[in-house]
Image (tube, rainbow over all chains, first blue to last red):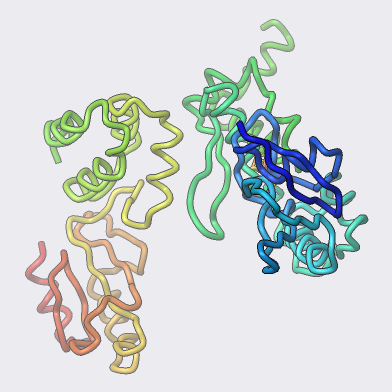
Length: 204
Length: 150
Ligand code: SF4
Ligand code: FES
């Protein structure tokens, strides 16, 4: 692991080969907002909230820091007018789906995002994939996954697997930024194995 | 279709998780749709989670998770065919089959889809039945063409 020296927000930062810009920033105590990132999970790059400005040989570009690898002499700006605008629009789009997600509402306040900018499409799920990846990578149960494509894309608990695995876990509820994982699970429970909760409660 | 053929397809790819799309395509091609219990067999044989099989099976339009007809009818609604009367052609096909795009008739004879464009602008307006192109179609010719497909 060779050491790399780069610059984030004017500060000299040391990182090692194979790290992402997000990791390097965190080690240096510089905050970059994220939604779909989770330390225990593989980088996903789904939400684009962690977008930063990088300068390579004087050329500026915008990259997702949770995927972008560190490189020697990289110059990174985690806030700029352009970066803030990108984050604001992303937030406005996500808020059209999940207008009351506390995480998003807090970020919206910080970035001046207007949650009523776009027509509401309350799917609640923002497709961050945290539940899907947590279930697959950490729990290795694969009880919840993405289905369909495009505008129909959604997460779905697979009844056959959920009936066996979810009862004793339900850990994804707490990492979901919108509580939709929980809602989707209970719907699956109601459809695939109704009554189990009631009998567990009443010992019947 | 008999399950022997499906078993044979699945057997050929046993243990090869990278073959998922191939297996699904072969089964789709032979059986016209992917029953859920078959997807379970695929997951077990290829040693991949059932949820991933479902993700892939729902991602691509090629795959159908509901029963399809024996014959696939595609009506081109691309711009060239549209200008040459694809709308009337589609209406005529809908009348002849009794179904709308995305549907399958109760006797599972036809499934109807539109597509734009199906790639033969110079032959339009056209319909494709089971991969065979029927060029320069008119609403009147539809009955005759479909008669061949029982
Ligand atoms: S249910 Fe929640 S955790 Fe899962 S993808 Fe949707 S928003 Fe993310
Ligand atoms: S945190 Fe980087 S794309 Fe979501």
